[in-house]
Image (cartoon, rainbow, N blue to C red):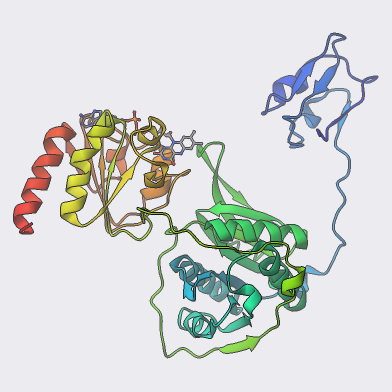
Length: 399
Ligand SMILES: Cc1cc2nc3c(=O)[nH]c(=O)nc-3n(C[C@H](O)[C@H](O)[C@H](O)COP(=O)(O)OP(=O)(O)OC[C@H]3O[C@@H](n4cnc5c(N)ncnc54)[C@H](O)[C@@H]3O)c2cc1C
């Protein structure tokens, strides 16, 4: 339901609000009075534009005002599957460590699962000063309710100022559930995190408006400040097995009988593409011209022992499955070598690959934006360049 309230008696039908609304949610009805549709996001952009103050937003109930100065420390959630921590969690730990050092505070890792004490030790090696270990059969596999309730209780008890989670499928699910229960803000899919020196607030940067601008978001009034970050946005830290830290054991808060969802089985998807961990990626875009155009891309990837990526244009055209898509709405990758073939280098594509160590672009248009971020550029027809590279690597690598 739209939240915007329109005082029909005051409205003069000038249409200023209609023009101001970025979401096209306002229009004038047959009586020349403003009406609002479900597209309204309650952003408030129209309110200041109305010359007769006919528009308002009801006061949204605020959470009980609490002393946010009591919140201290940076936390990360360590995601694990069958007793193995995901590398995304250590990327979070690496960045969390930097933020904690900037704030002069501690880094805490939250490890939830069953028979996962070894992960608590790993978390210390990756930079945690303290680990909350909740080891319980109810947490053996990820389920939103018991995981979220556990983290919510830990936050209420220990009050962290910053809480970071990896933007994996589970991390996204969990972060939303935890933030909602804590009545705090959450910035999803950040591409940068920093501390504002004057205020010590977390600066959470992420693409907005279709990736055309980068927005930096702050959460000044609620705690913890929560953010999710996609895989490969931050560098993987080097673990130090000699680091010392404290492991604090905490109890799970839900019994099996209280949990509505039951895990019946796991079915592993065949042929899954692991772009995030690939050291070499050869990607094809609209320039490959069709599904068969990915054949030379695959051959080069195979010779180099790499994975095949794609632009959204190629995925949307149905030439290759979505799992291969690199970019803002696909995977974020950070390989040692990224070869972009027939990809123009739109900002949304760059958002997923520009931190690759070495970028090679093959494009017949010398003005293509990809050349602005490429370390090496080859201006030419990919259907000639790519097979020539494959042949040359085959010889050099004896394959
Ligand atoms: C909200 C939003 C999210 C998006 N998310 C993503 C995303 O996650 N990933 C993504 O990739 N895009 C994303 N996009 C789309 C993005 O804006 C571009 O449209 C897309 O990346 C273009 O793909 P492309 O470079 O393959 O195609 P094009 O822009 O059409 O470029 C094709 C290129 O191929 C070159 N070429 C053609 N033939 C040859 C040849 N024979 N040899 C060599 N070069 C050749 C051309 O010179 C051209 O530069 C998103 C857009 C929006 C609005």
